[in-house]
Image 1: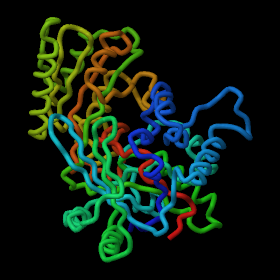
Image 2 (image 1 turned 120 degrees about the vertical axis):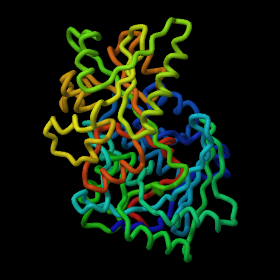
Image 3 (image 1 turned 180 degrees about the horizontal axis):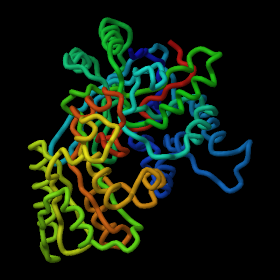
Image 4 (image 1 turned 180 degrees about the vertical axis):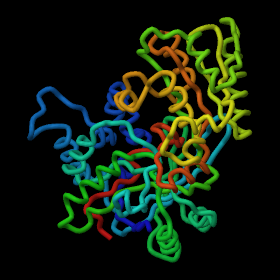
Length: 437
């Protein structure tokens, strides 16, 4: 099964960079151009300059976003803005955060993981990915030969080996800071010893599910094949978290529909009522928030009972709750998927509503011509109110047990089925290739 190894991490030198919140960022794929500019301006040593650099009109083969990243990276190492650990380590990592009014602590490890083809069923993708070019990430990896951001991986361990290791830590963390989102980060370097061996042995019997970073993993796999003639290029940096960790929070990603020709909400609701019970939540301008909250609470209660439902907003003065009448409805669509896949809320919405009623199929999903995604409910409502989208569908989060059964069975969920909050940050620890064991 999975092979993980300690590695000589590259980290910011705290004697040169005292405030890590000035140089750490979220993953590149959630950063727009405005945020990119913001991070550039925060610090001349912000990791954005390596992971997601600016592109200029005069860029050419010798001076471009990739060559500049490599030059900056090497320069920061020479200036000791960054330093490489003398000894390999596994890095224990904790995050304290709040969501939904609750406080959580999520713990895991940073390690180098041997890349494997998906058909070996050691590293498993858990959802379909949207079509976007991987050439950009591959060019960055070729030029810099480093993993600046970790892939988010999940493993299953009911014995809580990693969590128990944290309880044995008596040393102060090598990193301890709060970022701009008020999330606390703590990192320990765990060097050779029985704890390291127990974690390595644990993962030998485990599969790893990719929670976030499918494109980066596929890029690392391709690069390892290009460099197969050299040792140490067949590993990639991962942040690994136990599926049963109490701090593993999965949030939903909501669906927004646009560009429907001759769309009529009343006609759509009539068609939807074939498969779903409809409950209306009317509102006036002065109680819209109250009505939305009421609909959301009803949606949550239905999900807690193991039933399937969605919230709906079509820009009128009502919200709607759509509750599936019968789980057997999915059988009529002749799907080549397991019953576990067909029981996912995201699958039911995709097949019964998006494909069967709205005719939004794989091509439209891939190029996002009719379907986009939002994690923030208020932003989704605004998109409809401002006329940028015609419909907003609100979902319950996918349960961890569903992820295990579907991905463990070798199937991929529909894209954007899960949002593991918070994402792993970029720049906390970097893996320099080739891996030096």
